[in-house]
Every structure is written in C-alpha cells, then in structure tokens.
Length: 364
Figure 1: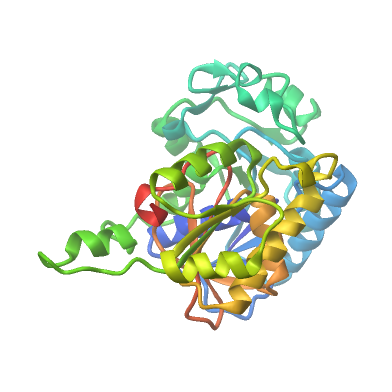
Figure 2: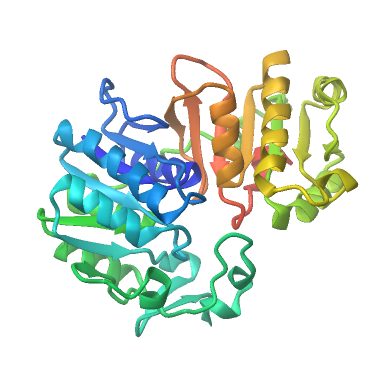
C-alpha cells in the first residue's frame, strides 16, 4: 500500500486520479482507515488553512497512523506553488515516520510550473509576478523556494525541475530511506519507477460516451450540480453558465428553486457570488453556507454528477455530507480527481482546485 498525505482534498483527489491512471485502486479518506483493498490511500488532513502548529499536528498524526501499518512508501502531497505550511508538515511527517531526509518536487512542468535556479516560475513568470501574489490566504510575494518554505531546509532537498526528464531523474535519486513529496507529476514519475506504468485508454468520461454513441442516438446528460467556491473563478463560471443556458445561483440560495432548476434543466451552478450578503463575511463562513446548500440539494434529490471547485469548498461539502471515504472511479483531465462515495453508486464527484478549468464535456 502507498500512502499519500495531502493538506487539502483537491490534492488528495488529484493523486487518487493519478493512481487510477497507473492502473491502481485508490481512495481519498478524511480519516485514515487501512481496512481497504485500495493500493493507494490519499489522506486529506484539511490543514492548509490551519496555523503552522495545528497543520504540523494534523500531518504528524496522520503520518503516525499511516506508519503503524508499514506502507510500501509515503508521499507528501503539497501545493505546486507551496501554499500552506509545507515545511512544518514535512518536519512532522519525517518525525512520525522516521525519515531524516526529504526530496520535495512541487514542480509540474507540463502545466508551466517549474523551478530554475531555486526560483519557482509559472509559465515563464516569477511566481510573485503572477496572480498568486494576490492569493487571499497565502500571497506569494517571492519566487525564491527557500523563502517560500522558510529557509531552514536542513535535510530537505528541493531540486531544479524544468521538464519531464528532470522528474524522471529525481525519481531515480529518491531512495527508500527518503521521504518523497511534491506535486502530481513527481508522484507520477515515482509510480512508474516503482513498476506501475500509466495505463493507456483508461478514460471513462461522459464525453467518451457521447463520442461512442451511434448516429442519431441521444444520451441524456447526467443531473449535474456545479459548486463553485472559488471567488476568482466565479465570474467566468457565470459567463459559461449563461452561454450554456444553465441556471446559476449565488447567495442567498433558495434550495427549492435550485432543485426545480435541476429537475427541468439537469444542470445548475451554485456559488458564493458578490452580493450584499457576502460583504464583511469571513470566507470560511461563506463556504460553509455554500456547502450547506449543496448538501441540502443532494439530500433532496438524486444528483448523478457533483462538481466541486476549490479545495476548501470541496472539503466542507464532503464533511457536511458525512463522507469519509471516496473511491477513485474515473480518469478525467489532469488536475481533477473523480470519485464515488464509498458504498454508494452516486453521485460521481469531481474535485479540482480553483486555478484550473473544468473540461467542457463535464457540465456544458
């Protein structure tokens, strides 16, 4: 068994999806439970928004539980631009698991996120010159990796990685006595190194079903609820909804109205929006309101596909619904994890961070 410890659920879901692409059974868990036949368990500690001390405690506790069952190896999933308390969590996991060295590779070169000369670049721009500089919780005010992490990198190696060849090379240098951590592309390279090559043709998306339909055959779209908790993405999602003639709702939400729109249109978008009820409210309070609406809609009718945008939003919705285990069930686009609550046939839940877009065939 391979154990992944992630500080948010979108990262855990992303790595579960990566494991599925490599032909492995994978689960996302909000509380570590080894009683599973999954090859990969991705534990969400939901610690990115915590204080550094609390985040370290959450990561360390997860690592202690994981270490008790002696996994084949442990991977620490972190944000590709190092948001959160990455070093504090790494130190806690190292202490709990007995590792004294860590190789941390947050770079995702295929998405333009690389490290050159100790600086983190996004699509060729220094990190602090991008929109990440205005992140509301973790503004990226420098591109220097050492400053982003907190300078004290004793025992932690963060190599330059600019392309796939660098990922493969660093995976080869990560020995059994070293804790590995970083982004999804380094995890991919490590899975391949350990003998799990990517499986071709492992897709199962709605778009594939439509392409395989016989001429003249109509496939009804699944009843889909899109929950957007990303303030940065909301205006774009509203525009996409208008273009697709999809009903969109911002606070205050009317669950009856949303349910009626879903019954007649088979798709609806809900978000926080920018109305007067959002002024002066803490983001966490607004996300809880959004999550409660989503949960109420799911309890009131059968939803076949649930799209959750934003790690904090997804985590709050999942916890509101009482889901502690979700099984990876479908290979989607990079950056997206598609899961099914354990023991249920529906809904299929797709989770992604706010910084990526949804594939068109998922909801429009």
